[in-house]
Image (cartoon, rainbow, N blue to C red; front, side, top):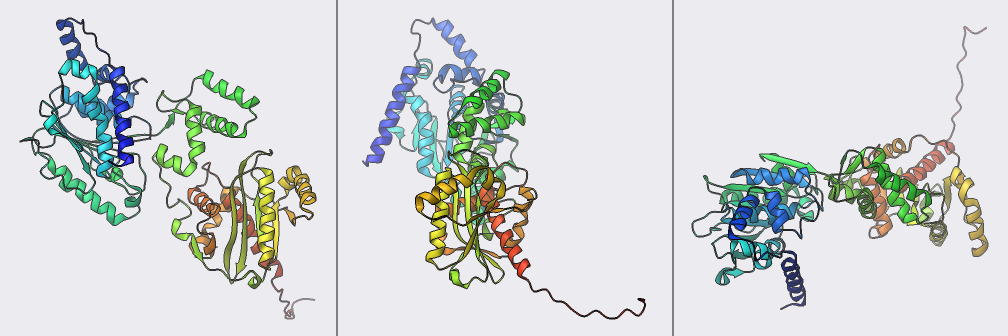
Length: 537
């Protein structure tokens, strides 16, 4: 057995021990009370979950949880889609609570759990099987479920003949009968795959398999509960296609419109006034920003600060996909296909000095914050991005970028201008640059950009034409650098009016503007002769 398999097995054994400890039973309960209790629990999936699965149900159910459970359990034939944010218990409810509840009621005979791979399906289904093996309350009330001769990885058949089977995307589910019983509950959990979703033909193939071979496993009559659960990871994916044919669809993002408790907001505001840790301040500012625009967590299990922490650490683009069902892969303004790389000419071939534009961010502190420095040259009507620094950095690190940029250009015998918005240069950085010059024995040629800039979003959006017409190229040597990837991600995530990181696109716009202005200022002025005006006296 591989080490990874041994580790996985050990984790599941520990998990079963925890299940056993979490589900003690009252051995002195009178039989009549036991029967009445079981009957009461089988009338409500919520009460069933609280009693039999206390280790999962440590937080109160939200209304969307109740609606999901009732939609599936109260109808024998239904097609349900739940596109919920990560960490909102969709797998626990759809893959553990609901099938166990139906099984105990005698309404489930043959379940298929489908995921993007067979291994992933096995791991998801193992959570349910562990309950059958170790949950004292289930075993005490309904007897032992283990049937040793049919208890194997990927397919488990209980002592009462209920079958649970794992299926990977694209695998043949034909013949998935349990004796004479066709599947009566099919759960598609985490079926969408990043790689597949980037290829429309592969999405077509998976969709055809799901709607044909998989859904066709159901009998034409009798129970047929089909459930698809996933957050939306792409503009074209299985969960979105399933929404178009489903009987019942619901979307839950991590935040929803509403007000947080006054005490929670006050606590955030008080901490923000005294907090000196820059990373913590970012989280608090993010939380307060959502609160001020009228948002609260969709599930009371989470606080606003907990949600903001995950959003800030994950970044805007990924958090939109994982928590808001809003995948940003191609960009709403800038498209991924527009981000072109090629081998660029020598630095000495540029007719105008290159421009390195520095966006130092808005925080007047020396702690880390998002900043950007982008070097661009203009060559035969093309804008060439020759070097990029984008990301979180302290003021000292940002100035080090400038010196690295200076060395980078000089080593290639190029000429460049280093520009930064004048207001930042005056109020924050003259002293810092002067101190750096003393340490390094020479200054970098930073000068202030005195332009009165229009709205930032409008300026950045105006760049889209250059990208779309194929006039912007990255140096191919930058393709694998994380700074370049961050700049491209910021362009793809850009959307006017939406709060995203824009330091990279802003610096790019500043450099391109300077280059265009240089061309216009150096353009030849032609003076012609004026014809005589015979009407002039």
